[in-house]
Length: 369
Image: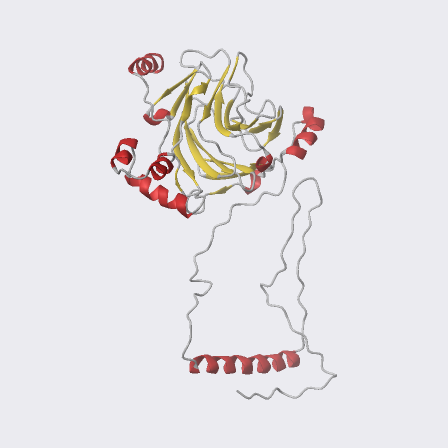
């Protein structure tokens, strides 16, 4: 293709005007720093120079189109409109505000584990819930690691009852799932009995207390727990920080928790609304971390309605497909697979399928219903 641009002289100023939608990236700082933002400015050009550029690039476009038409090895590439957009989680730039009475201690806690939120940026789910491309994660609440004021019921012990008669303190229970280095999402359906000093949802180590004879914010009272209370406060290291609005009392709600062990973050969701990243630096914790819930309110109920995890590798993905069709150890043993393969598949089966005994269920029905 031969083209001949229009003549021009050095006295003519030729500039290239940026597109109207062209913007430079905007950078924000997270934490108590300055808020940085950069923007672009456009340059006005003379109509004559624009005409020269139009002729120049028009010739190039025509030549490129002709060359593509003559080629017999054209490969189709989807356009930007045809490609499926990838949803991105909401970004939260502003840190939560520390409770005034613990400002000095708060600074020390932030140095170890960051806490970030922005109530104005709370956004609903865009499409699917987190980790929908992962697989079901079969864990439950531990019958051993719990307060004496916590009872379990339902399929696979996934329903937790706090203080079935009356409340004399704070009770908690730990899940069986070790969270470190993985990506996990679980949802809790909380009954309408939302009230009291503190109802909490989060994670903790085995050193976190699960019972105390006092009404307190148990999860996050020390460095062994990270929790969100129904009053909208985040707790860690005995320090509270504003995070979201107080939950409405006597109104059922649904709480989602996303743990990202790779990024080291913990994110909360409430009734299909993402509340933003609550804690950071969790990938630096070397002790095993577990899901934890606790409550001071009598006869409150929390049900583990959904639990999912991300795949580790292709082998893990294949195992998840097999487990969908083999849901019990008895069916797995009938396959007569090699010992190592049987053990690997059995690891994905729920290890907490021990049902509630008839006596336990009778006591639960008597006190709660």
